[in-house]
Length: 294
Image (tube, rainbow, N blue to C red; front, side, top):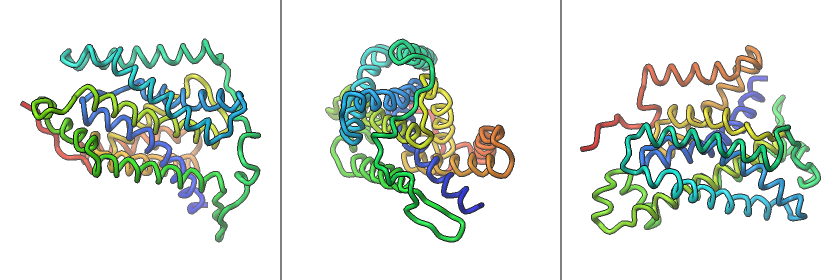
């Protein structure tokens, strides 16, 4: 049972990691906690189902949902956050919460407030079958696909950040936005690209969760967003590898809590782990101690 819980926790943790990366990238670049990011994750699931209902195959529907949510992320930055670049952080934080509520209600208007199932006919028939079995542990094909897609996206993101000019610009902004602007970096363009990148990955996470649990609802982004933020803090806010590690750790802690205590305690166990890390290592697993920028 323990091994199976680890497998289930790793699956959930990878999904949390994909959402947490969006939080930590935006924070790393503009030091903003984008609480509307959970709603981007929710929109990714609903948009995918809408595209599937138009007769599109699942891979194309997911790709279009990624592009649509990336555009929404950029629009969110331009409309809500860019005018507040020089405002106090509290103003941007309140705006983020407001945009989260707005997107939730917009989804309710478009798709209704009731939970919807993921269209199973869009999934390959073998998704529910075992891909690997050893001892008492079973890994289904759906879990394998989640592993492969999530890991591929994380590797791709790491390559973008470390090997491209845009990634170099993102890291420069994270160090010192003023100096980056003086060096000729288009600050607004890089920030918008960061929002687009994080939003696209969040959309994939939304699709994975709705496939895995066979349900989606307009408020699903709230709890997932809070947990992903907890994962980002756990790994070290501003650290992309930390967000990935924090997501996996949180997913495993939550699943073990549900398996060995009780399902109602799963959220409490996850947050207890985060609180302990904050108490004994405030910078997170891979975060660095923060110093106030001049």
